[in-house]
Length: 553
Image 1 (cartoon, helix red, strand yellow):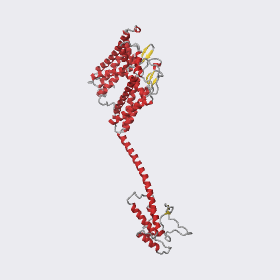
Image 2: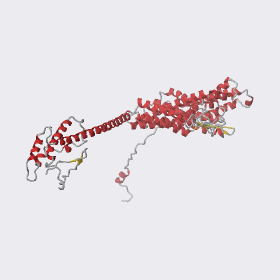
Image 3: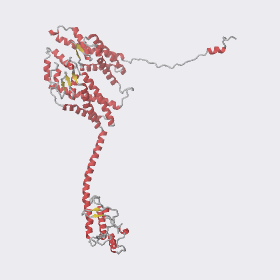
Image 4: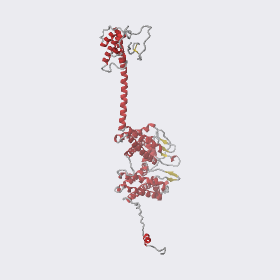
């Protein structure tokens, strides 16, 4: 058989197949949420509406000065281009005029744009919250198209941060209102959510301080503001309205200056012209009527106590209404609140800085960093400390500590009084045995059985010089000074003191025959060697004598 001949077995092996199983791959589907087109259109409408408002103001300004011979070269096309430039300025882009860069954000207009866009988003409240984010590209693209196509003194890329920040704030506002609880990917503990609320309250307190300060400054500097307005030489009611309206668009900026002045750091009204409670520059100001509200004097450091007092009130009120279980959790809430306040004040003060020229007016606005630090310390930190100190646990611990200190002081006072009474009673107890010993064996006092036994033992003759048996006398005749040392007890400190004195008197009476001349315990004659002591220390009495424990011969 040939070697190339194929056998049936070979044919069967060639027909064998191998099956390979491949696991299913995850399928990623990008699905647009319901209502995304509506949110996108909302953003475009808000951008075009804001631009239209600025354009109308620019047209009215041109109409009010059209009769002025100095404005003869101005045309409607120029007015429309100026409207686009102002819209770029509203988004934070600098406007270059005559080679000089100017930047001044109408902060009230920015807030109005956020509010209007949020109002437009309410129509899409029935759609998922994720759809609201599509308003951001709609607003940004429309705004940048207006600036890029119509502005002649600003660049569209410099307006990009503002074109994104305004719709983002409005969309975040809408999403927070629509979501009842934080999403799973953003777990927030209870103290963090409460800290956000407390931070909002502190920011509101800062706003109240700024409003009150601005109102007081407006009352004090109204005449100066009116005098600066007359320098503008407005010749019509429309021009006056436009001048006043343009300054109203900077109302949050004025409030930021007010807060910067009250907290202490102050604001620059030009290079080297600082206005604060500790410094005031009387130099020339730009012809802006609102600058007439700047204080012309420096009252001193006490102005910084105003936000600190407000911080105390905020902390006390918050602790009275809402507090965590422990002071540690309350401190965490205070830390989050201080962080929220710092972010709000930072954004607020940054938007209030302006560039109104190339030299002296290039520095114009609050001292941002210092204002943030001072506001957080005077409002946020003070409120947090007060909230922790007013916590029920802290208050209870303070009360216990105070009670312990009062009790310790009371015991110290009573102890000093008892020591004085004990000393007087001790001296009286020591005088009693001495008086009884002076009476002698023939005293008129009655003797106890122990005393009579001691007398009989003293009169009986003994082989070794006579004396009392130690075993019979010692249990019934304890030493008076060993049983009741001076100063150890007071005569009025216990009801049993009377019995103790009676027992001491009886024991002393029993010892009288022993210490009498010729007795077993009498002093040795002169020349005799004194017997060694039994180890008991002698004690000096009040009368100068010494006494110790009785010894048997």
